Length: 317
Image 1: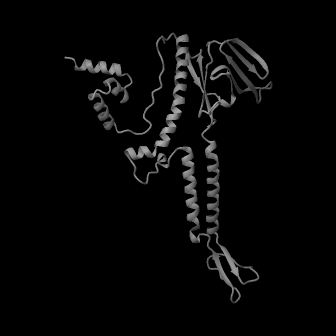
Image 2 (image 1 turned 45 degrees about the horizontal axis):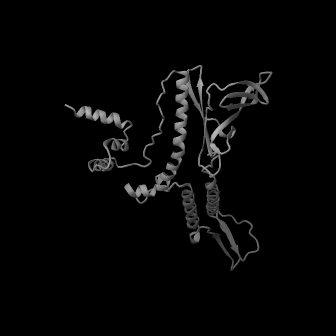
Image 3 (image 1 turned 180 degrees about the vertical axis):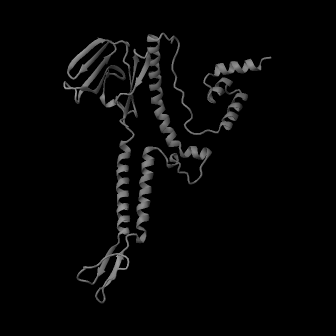
């Protein structure tokens, strides 16, 4: 929503466990290597802490700033340095990432700006249609050829006395298909909103054509591509976060992390035909195009080597 995100990975000495938090990115300030914005040199995390005042009756907010570098840690209360010590982790315990990358920019962009104008126009169109329906429910009396309009009430059983050759009728705001035009315009705004958001109406259960299989995947292809783009960013973020967790567990809990490397595995974005996928993988294996281990990995096996070893063990006499 804000365009960027942040994770903070620290060690909780009291509970003897790793603690992962997501600080408000609006309070995060980062310093980077000039020729490589992906490398951080320092991070400051700023937030408000509610402390009791001298009377102890009401909270008095204090601005707290944590300033981290690879070698030092500083804690500031307002403009007063409360603590300065060596960085206990030996690295920055933060993972900063953009929602959507912007060229030549360290910070990312939000999904919302392209949608805001269409959302405002949708609200305006709804307000117009609501006003028309409200006025049609309280009809307007139109008098032609009269000088005054006293004692004219629009209610059941009302009797109007008008001069000769005068006309009296109720204004029908719904005639001529006016409501249909507004409804069509709202549907057009909806289409614009979904196109800009890369989220087809089908993703929200609107499937009047009854699409399925390849046709449904084609309909949802824009959303699938959007998810795939974000997975490129989030995958690296989750791997980096997991690496920090392993580092802390190895340092404070004695976990043997030698040779461990976290890898983000994502499931399929869209529903897949399992039987069809199995048949395709089998055909590739029988044709000698790919190995059984590769087929097992494509079918979702977390450890193809171990799975293949179990297959051989069960097949041996």
